Image 1 (tube, rainbow, N blue to C red):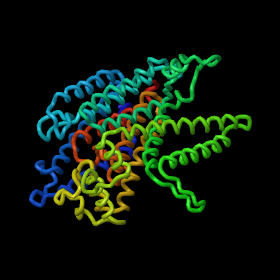
Image 2: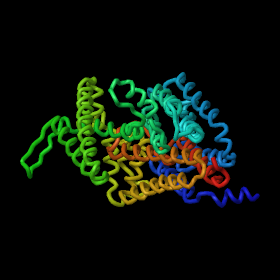
Image 3: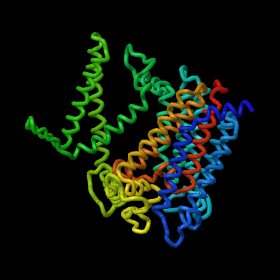
Image 4: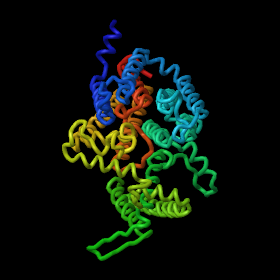
Length: 466
């Protein structure tokens, strides 16, 4: 009895309330956007809102079920759980294709998407492995196994293919970085194999910060594509920098700013080091951007066109970029306060101006009905939940609990950021649902189970030390 009282007393009500609010707002939006006057009953399972109510009930039941399970079960059975989700990812590859992808298990509309549940299995096993590994004295085997836990489901998901979920799995890389996983055990042997007299590496800055460096490389690559065909005008100086030189100019500005920033951090005797780092960074960046630009020119025509559409370098509002164009129109039509509940016109299912407005583009009807003010509230609610999960992660005594919590936070952030980015032309259309909001059973069930496992682990945090 005392243990149950402790669990209830330790239950994180703010996170649970945020979860319930998102579920209710999502149900309300699905009902509004898919409303059929001939079937107005919210519980009519012949309609999408009726099915969504059914999925909500199943999700709450599964959430309660995983909450009642003792938290030690997730640690002890992390490998079987992971193996089970991988087996589903393998089985689904032999299923008939739906919309060009083999991503569903089931019959007709009553199917599940195994990739959604693979996130849970990966998060649990990653937490288990990292919590038992010696991160401070990590070996090459430790780094390879930690990355393999992430890469194996990513490869299977890519074979479906499901680009959206594949991208979401990269969120686990930030969890590795948070836990201090260094790639030095892999990088150092390669560097030491280079015959440089008198130099022997024991530790590198690149290995320690490999993950953020990887995303900096992606940022520089995107910047290269944006600026290589652009013109930079500095009217006050009468300077016009066209084409590829604009990339070099941008890199030079970043390098100079980085130098002065490092001068403030380093001591006086280390200012020479700051200059050397800035110069090396500039040279490496120029080499990277040259390779990126050359590779881009070698791409096939349709591949270049797709990248140009995503980056806004080419316009095709009635063709390949139709979805994002219509989504942006729907979001903008809501104005400051919106058109009112069930008054969405651009993004309703009946008009079909915005395809998939109840799934991937559900933010459109919500923004159209409630305007900028309502959208801001929804964004703040998601940010509150993500930050709350981070707070929960940091208060854990168990490293397993902390790693799992950070995995949930990053997965939720990726879904939130990319989905809303798709709706406002900030991100490519890659089919990522809005958590607890979009129509669909797999997403709602998996996120609910993920959330209730976190609530369970957190409620027993005082009883667990490892």
